[in-house]
Every structure is written in structure tokens, then in C-alpha cells.
Length: 274
Image (cartoon, rainbow, N blue to C red; front, side, top):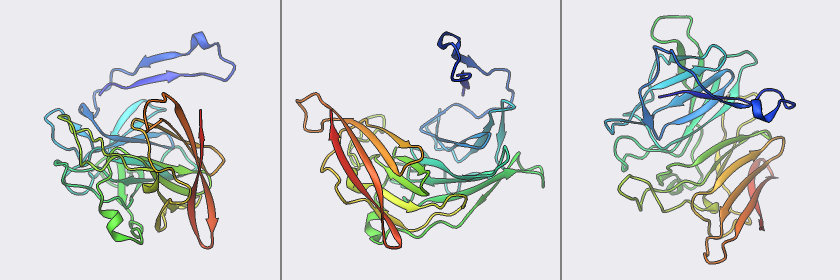
């Protein structure tokens, strides 16, 4: 449960002056955990769930104030019996330093068979000025409609990446379905490019629309342990992985570009290799 910060300074800063520092002296802090999710909401770094040291699943929600460098506890926990190996991102944040909405997708509870829904759960966060139940006031908002193909929503979706693009879309990429696991509970059966999910998340809105699957142009297979990032200012997601066919030793760079079709938005994948 340590907190470390890298002070990057200004763009013109001397690289030798950039370094890590540990934030200590905090009496209130979350207990040690793994497999939790984190998202930046204004000046808050929100963490949810995770696996505790006794291997139980946590339902706690904490926020670290990056300006004041203190932890604050939410006034309520996640629904059901905890959540781990889930994905989370900020959907909307207020113009001030605090307050906003996050989306949480997938993961599982205490048991790997206790899968959490792929459809996003939306949580509204505000500074609590009403009572003493917690420093942060948390309210669960209405979840979006599921995928048109309901069966596709029933897969467990663990350790995936959830991103909100500047174009106003929410993208859920990668992860595994938990069908093939090692002794530590890590999964190897990867969700492929054709399992990429997309929903409308309009700029400035605390809502998410209907989910769709990204099918067009997606490669048939993908490598494990890929890195994923959203391109700022553009409707693109960049994925870097290894050649899944093996033997070549190549690193692939794939770009998923969003295109509009009628009222809804779908995703198309453009492929390149190095």
C-alpha cells in the first residue's frame, strides 16, 4: 500500500532532476492489495476492489488526492461481494479539482466463477459534504444497455483495458475469459481483437450508450502480454504485441481506428507490422 510519485517537472526540465519519491506519513490508507483497478478523476486517483492479503475480494473504494497527498474513503463500497481483475476508466470529470464519473467493466468476485458483467457500471463521485459516512460521496448511476447479442455479454472478462477516447467513445480491449489459468489464477485464454467492445460516451456526459463489437478488419489472432494506449485527440487505439504465429520474433503494431456508420459507431482495425 505504498504510494510513489514521479515528479516530471516542466518539459524543459533536466532529465537528471526527474525522479521517484515515496509519499509517507499517511495514517489513513487502504490495506495492501493486488488486482485492483485505478483511474484518474480530476485531482483524485480512484482505486476500487482488489485481492487482499488473505486472498479475499475487496469491495472498497478509495481516492488519493494528488494535490493534498492524502487518502480518502468512499461512503459506500462496490456492490456484491467485492471485485478484482476488473477494468476502470474516467468517463467524465468536473471542471473543478474533484468530482466526476467512472466506468467499471468485467472482473470477478471472491471466486473466478463469480464473474462480473461486461456491461459498464457507472459511479458518480463527489466530495461528501452531507454526512460523516465517508470523505467521498459515491452514487451508482444507471448502467447502459447490453450488447445486441446477449450471449456475447456472458463471457467473463478479466484483466482487460478500458479507455475513453477524445472522440467520445468507450473501448474495452483484450483480457482473458478465465477458462485456462495457472496456480496463481492468471488466465491465458485471451480475448481477441474481434472481442473488442465499443460504446458511445459523449464528451462532457456522464453516460454510456449501447455496446457494439468491433469486427471489421480485425486480425484473427493476437499475442499475449500486449500493451495498449489511446491516441489523444484521435479516435485510435494502438496495440503492440508479438507475432502470435511464433518463430518470427517480430513485434506487431496495430492501430484500431473508429469509423461512423449511421447512428452508431463501430471500429475498424488497420494492421501494420515491424
